[in-house]
Length: 411
Ligand SMILES: C[S@@+](CC[C@H](N)C(=O)[O-])C[C@H]1O[C@@H](n2cnc3c(N)ncnc32)[C@H](O)[C@@H]1O
Image (cartoon, rainbow, N blue to C red; front, side, top):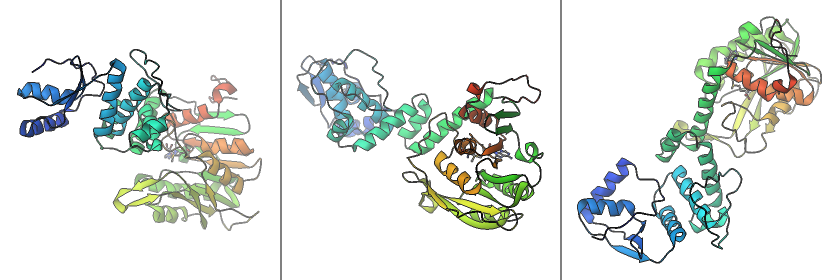
């Protein structure tokens, strides 16, 4: 056999399982797909087939092509992208390198991490769409894979799980956010209370304790987003009791709810409050898969309850659409909600200058909504990491403050 030099190994090596399957196949049937090499014996495509054939001492068919180095790399990438069954992250890596070799500028969100050498001006400038189409891939799929690869760049374990099909893209992104929140948790020690300008106050702790001093019948509205999981169910009873105590008579509590346990959540909210209505937030372009039930969820129920008999002050609009695709960054709270709908609900249930409370503030979406449209705000969260996120989002750093203040209050 001729000794060949594998100069164009541009694809990640196959994992052990795939390599063993290829070895077994070649052992049984020989090399079926020719390896591609340059006239001077450098392999462009078929490194694994060549290495296995060498190991087993069998010959393999060869196709010789006449290319310079960059063209060789391009050919190798293109052949692999067209033929290999790759996960989205490996595909994005190969696509990025092919784009680089072609001199194609990758669009927004696609990292240009050229690592070796400089691609010559090959005179074949194209864009992601043309390149993707050439490979038989829908351009939006190509962009989505590139974006996902960027987001998982610092999380190789998760990227490998996506490529193996063990988790999907949404799950991977959510796991990145959870990991980042966990890291933030290690260093987070927000002051117990932070007051900012515009009548905004955020506290750190369990709402049943840190909001115990809120006077009876002093709150104009509660707009909130409690946990939807089963363990969180008792919180809905406590929220109901809290609302019944602090809300002014006839005023409203608006609570985002889950769907799986919606009947239980509504029943508990109704223990001390009066059921008024069920609103909705439509989530175009986003969906949550409930695999067991084979349902793609595209809206969120919003429970609306009153403290005592409801006293309408104006017409209430019971549904709102979350604009945009609602993409969250890797540093965002895993359950961060779109701001637009929160502005809507706050506007519906509180007049300018009135006080809105959110006992489950998370990363501060309700607080941001209140500040945007001039309502006072009081909120808290159990998790110091999310309180520090809220403070960051509200720009507490710019506001400055006196951390030696007796109460840890930033003014
Ligand atoms: C669904 S998230 C809220 C997300 C928020 N709407 C946002 O846009 O970022 C629910 C939050 O409730 C908090 N939480 C759970 N139990 C709590 C309790 N007893 N008191 C205060 N906060 C609590 C969790 O830490 C979590 O951040």
